[in-house]
Length: 115
Length: 111
Image 1 (cartoon, chains in turn cyan, yellow):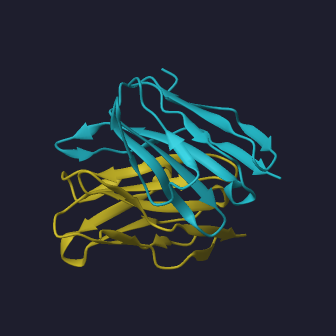
Image 2: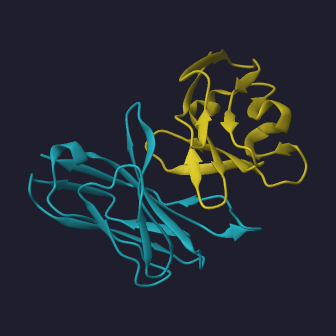
């Protein structure tokens, strides 16, 4: 049971380049989410999904796309990277318990630098 | 909108002293409540959670938290701080369709 995995661990991009951050979970969780973490800003929700084929925007969705074709995978796409997207990105997943979302399990993170 | 507040972005304690990290939430319905810890350059790890069972919850590494509905609080405590407790701590709540994190509190432990 690998939990939540993320690739790559580190990435450097040039402004304007695009890339996809990969996230997978093997716990059959319905809910998956992407956060970015910046110094002094806590965790900010980018996009989330409550099941395959269903995605929605979080607090800071601009410049990012997501899709959820399977329960296991939830990739995050940067369309045209900007220096403001330099951050650490975390993927997380959760199951439901009595109608509420239970604890989120986090991946190890991807540290992205945009030059 | 639902929110989570953590009093004090940075808390310092001496080794062996009591650790108290505060968390308050806004909700008309008792939510599920969580505390996470993040060590430098690592992901978030669950310390403990409250999901409508016992109001005093024990977690890993000697931490515990008490859910107080009347105060809408879920403060994290540890009787005796250890150097290895230095980390960032996040309180989080689940309100059904939403999962909200607090801004975090950085704990420093002084020798």
